[in-house]
Length: 244
Length: 235
Figure 1 (cartoon, chains in turn brown, red):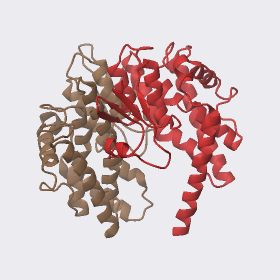
Figure 2: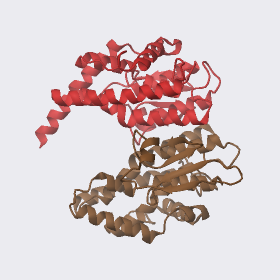
Figure 3: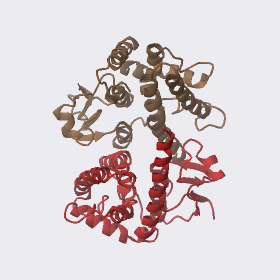
Figure 4: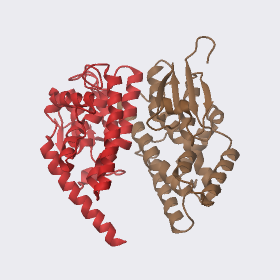
């Protein structure tokens, strides 16, 4: 907590959880100091269950002791509670609608398709899962291109990272990790040149580098989870969710 | 005058959200009704990713997803009609949005599960899940309303719209399977809220009555049964 009187922000999260990264990154982009507490994403502590009784999930952002839940809700809250600082959402209602729609797509379609690759079996199942990811990436590629909602932009937020960059970016690192662990090609720079360039530029940002764990740690984690899944220990979807 | 068009049918609770928002704002629009079981060219062109209703078309630009549409309506017409839909306070906005996510992610699917249940056991389980969800929403209502009429306090606000669209679906489900869900004994605050919500000037004008919803629910149930039977045949 900031000794100068502070913003009273405490983030309960997990180091390998992309939704936690979204909030950490947003707080850094906005220059808001916060305390971080590492939690076990599979075994919610009493504190997590107290603040998030409905889902028992992470992240939980506490602002002056009041709990904010669900990463996309939290990101919007940060804009609205600190309106004079750097904003994550654009000001135009049409642009805001596009950001909200594609954020929904990120969690509703893209993330589950990436998770499905991770839990797929070799053969037709894996091929189908990879195809689904490609279809979803194609949709984003199109939006960055001519006639798309984010045509010609370096980032979805324009010259600077915005909410949709944070939502898509925190999670897209799993694409490279799964490419290696599952031995598949997901982000082919020839098939998705704009998406590839966007991801590369996103990952070069200082605040992003400070937030996302080193790739070898993520690889180690994903490999361990995959081995647990294959070991037939009755590993369930929780592991896959934790990875995303 | 067709600057604002809405693709969908009021019998869809998701479309009803957009209708309620437009009604609260007193914005005129043209309703382009979709026929159940068919998807028009315009729908497929306007929402190629999800191919679902509702779609709001404003100045020829499509906006998809009910939550996105309602927030858009609130931002484009901030002061019209009954005024703001999203609460003024940032924390309340976050709570309204969180509970909307919960309703879509967990609660409404549990209500649909009642209609899809093939055995008495499955039906009873689904009913219990809906009731458990309503208890959570009851608590949320007490906290958010602060003793007043709606989730938004004195005014109908975001969560009133995003959850209120289901009030006659709950009544229809109660009739369909002869159980009480939103009863005064177990969820007194929500029970009172539902009555007030239906009576609100902007709501009663546009909300389809539970009889119509029940008729539609029966058609849906028949379709679900047929789909389930067809899926079993394939195995």
